[in-house]
Length: 97
Image (tube, rainbow, N blue to C red; front, side):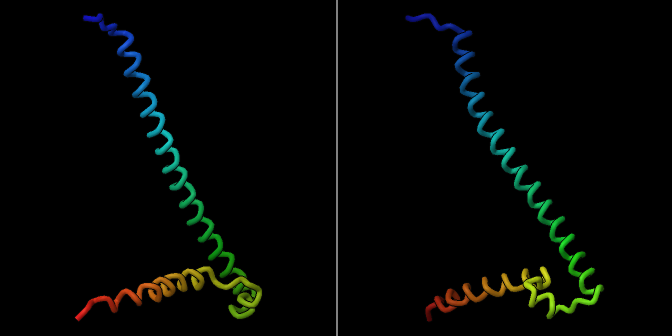
């Protein structure tokens, strides 16, 4: 029977674990980046809302801003769920009878 070298076996096991740790580390970094970007987006949306309110307080009407391509961010976000609801409608008739 061949002799098993404990150190060599441990080193091989460590190499396998290191590879697995590396992949999970990459996953954690990616997830953290997503979290950070979501927080940045939320802050940018708050700044956008404040800037829009400031523009309206400075005399710009909602219609004027819309004509300039600067409608309220809240109004733009409200439209998206309506599109989803319209795309979900065809599925409602599949109930059979």
